[in-house]
Amino acid sequence: MTLISLNTASLLLGVSKRTLWRRIATGSLSVSRSDDLQGRTLISLADIAQDIGITLNGEVIAAIQNAEAGLARDQLELALAFLEVGQTERALPWLQIAAAHGDVDAMLTLGEIQLYDSAEDPKISLNWIRRAAIAGHPLALAIMEALPGQLRRREGPAE
Image 1 (tube, one colour):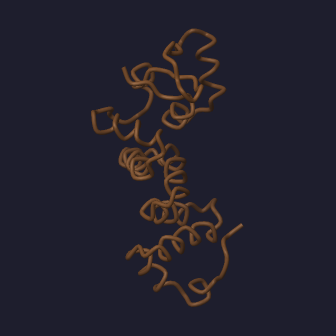
Image 2 (cartoon, one colour; image 1 turned 120 degrees about the horizontal axis):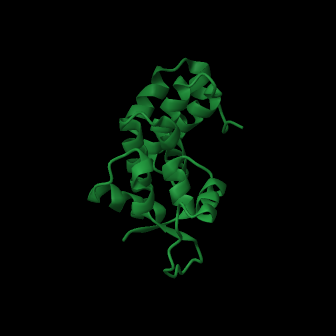
């Protein structure tokens, strides 16, 4: 049985931890009695599998466990799995976490998604692409080179 924290379950399901606590209170979701060295509340991945929206094969389950452990590459892999099935809203938090952990592919992907989202400030998306370029990502470098000079030379992070 694969156990995950409420934080991870919340990200996988695209719901708040408060929603999960309500499900636990009503009995529709049970808490594991296994000890967690970090004091986290754990639930069985199998209990929420049907609501996640991606196929949970061995590779995805391993990615979930590694992403929960803080591995940026696996956080990116989960984001890409959600993007493959058109669940951008569930992919974004994983991209943000992986990008914050320094994964340059996540930075570029996050920047590209935000660039095409009309609700987002383009400065934020360009900041992610710029950070990927500074880290040496070849595609991000090419994108930055293709931008008009004023955007390419903008200094400082977006607020």
